[in-house]
Length: 112
Length: 114
Image (cartoon, rainbow over all chains, first blue to last red; front, side):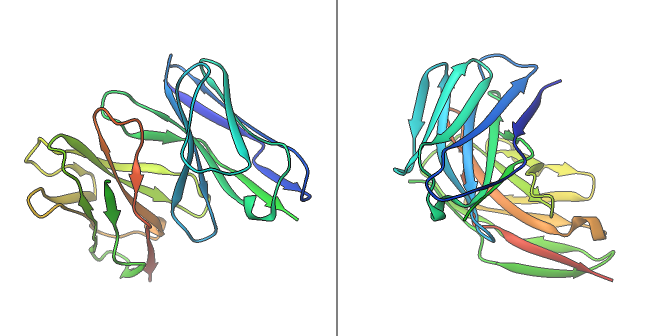
């Protein structure tokens, strides 16, 4: 069966520091992968998605970036964090047949 | 652009009772999929139920069922025999077969009281 993992689960970082959140999927090949952000009490905002290795689509201009170095690995990065980057980040993969997404456990980022 | 609207920011239901969460969407596509996701306090998103637009029969998963009205572009979720564990944020979402991304509503927070 397919599983998705992301880490770290919790992160507290100072403003201006770098960021790296990682996500891996097991049990499937060539999945579509997604990064969403959720501010406190709000809905989900799509940040990036990828349909294959090295292919990244950005939905919202910001100081975040994403990379897909391997088929089942998706990384969210920043060179310099802003206070507004605080939030809950969710990685997801898509089941191609019907389009539903399956989500990881999430990463809570607090920028101080 | 496709949009998904959840007009109820918060709902409350007594344990063992039935509650219906509303969702409307806007699309020009004829073939698409609709979903309800549950986000408990742990904040992991869990797929509750899925509906294919080409199917007239409403989807059902145990105590969860949908009322899919394609002409009205309405997709409500009914939770029967509500349990304390049903307390969560519920998100309605939309996708087409060819699109790469899901469009989410803003969510409805469901409280379950004794």
